[in-house]
Length: 437
Image (cartoon, rainbow, N blue to C red; front, side):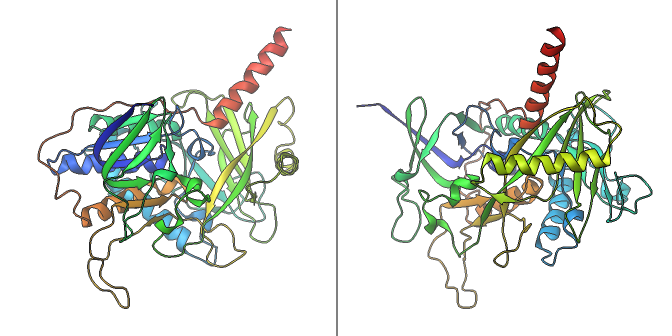
């Protein structure tokens, strides 16, 4: 019989994307602020953290401008709150170990559109503004009715690395290559997870984890059939779609901009990533638009969407597109549509939420739940999501029950290189081999 290792912890976080890492770090930081020792274990099925949805982004930090014209304001409000929480809990919190890398200006010095200090060390999180140009403009030129925004180009890998380092410094233990065995999740009669049964994670060895609180930050896995759907407190509509992006090397432009077309399909996003953010003018482009395809769409359909993006790029940059290499890839979008058929409803969700008192026709719960399911809608919302989950566990009494002291330093794990950067480097290498031949 295979030997089973048993681990006890205060909080088990399942999922090593931006949501799971940010939540683990925030919980560890708040325990440290209170002088409490907390045992947090984070597990992820991949060998590198942030290698799925968090690694497939174009590197665009959203603060709400892109969605202000939508009839549902939830996405705009969520992005505005996310930026506020970013400033408060990351740029201005001295207990966050990498606050100097979160180069957001203090509120007193902030003017809309100049909310960051883009000078400084290469490890800064935000490296350039994302400019907006309303319908009717072309190629993002300054004369094309610019809109004011706080959006910026972000370095997703650096953010993840800093969060991982800050988490392990506060005692978070990280295990990679461990898959949650969903069949091991057993429910008690009151809806909580069976505290004695715990859960099983399968890696190089089988580990039986018994925790006081379980946080499932599994992204699209929460929507799959093998995950217990009874975890949701109320019905919540979650739609997963695919989006096609194109990587172009070398870059067609050194500015990052958005062209908004509210009445047609002329919208266009261009994000420039320098190879060296500190001083390099060379880099690669990521171009995209609002395309949203079924999650199981075929490669042929994705290729046609990519060609439409290339046609837009060539129309905007006819003089510089020659001698460029490009490749497309798909990433996942998580949407929370308010009505069937609507799109671009991004937010974040967590639950169940403890009701310690009767509210309307919702009765008081006998005891706090011992698990949280988390669905991050956008990378940019991680500051608010981590803050909300911390407040939920604080309300449940998790921190009150912790002993005083401090946790020993934890063990970290590598963070994946963003998919677009890997593809851009592969285009470089292909060109070098061609020249060598």
